[in-house]
Amino acid sequence: MNLELSAVWTRVQNLVQSFLVTIPNILIGLLVFGIFLLIARIARNAVTSLSQRAGQSKGISLVFSRIVSWLVLAVGVLVALTVIFPTLTAASLFGALGVSGVAIGFAFKDIFQNLLAGILILVTRPFRIGDQIVSGDHEGVVEDIQVRATLLRTYDNRRVVIPNSELYTNRVTVNTAYPQRRLSVTVGIGYGDDIAAARKLILDTLNGLDGLLKDPAPNVLVRELGDFSVNLDVRFWIDPPIRKEAVEAQDSVLEAIKNVLPAAGFDLPFPTQQVLFHDQTETTDGNRQEQREGWPARQDNPRSRQGVQREAQQNQEQTQPSPEQARPQPEARQP
Image (tube, rainbow, N blue to C red; front, top):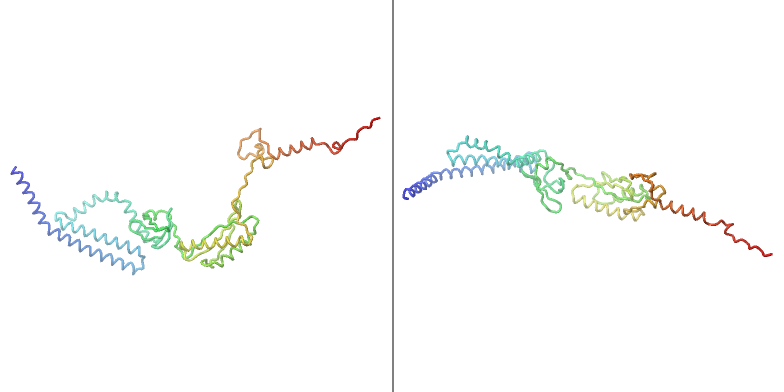
């Protein structure tokens, strides 16, 4: 029992002595890492300053300054480890990193993909911070382009985090890419209304509204002949092309058109449909020998109401007596 306690005590003493011997190395390693922290901050500020002088966007300077800072910190960690553990050489450390690099690459494949996509987005600049974009089901203002994802603020004040790889590989609509934007609304008038007069009235109304550009000028085109109305496509331009301006412009245009067209006698028809049974229309309707409409042919076709009414009228005319027959005959005189 005494031998076992002495062995344990000897082991504890050796561990304490090893730790005391390692304390200077730990302090030096922490000091070295602190120096690299300072170098990383200086390098980050230098990259930001150079990017601003080169006229690059804020997003590019932010991402590249972060990448440079992380690289400097990674080198600082390696140097600090070699100082704390003298037996750990740089060759063995890089060898271990090389062996585990494949596993790390597979584990963080999505992260590296988003990192590369974020760098490409910042370099090619399909959109910038502050632009209003549409990506899939999401629409809003780009708040930040980070290394892994892009932060989008929706118009109802929610944040959407979209991976950079998704933005780089999928379709993205940038609403604020150009200084001007064209909007359009659809207005339906009656088939009996004068299209040229309605077009002139709408254009005169749009020219008197604030917030719409005079150049390019608004225009009105006939879009389609609908089921119950002639649909006009009213097009106009706004500047700046932000969401707030677009919503307000559409509101003012629709309100003005709604007020002027009925006041000038133009019809804004409601959706209407007319449903007729086959026995309420022409005689041939419902006759599957003459009007198929995708039905199988048959011999016992239902008779139309017109046909039944016409036949009843003919029978009535045949059964009615003629005027000569309807005139009362004189009674024969008695001798």
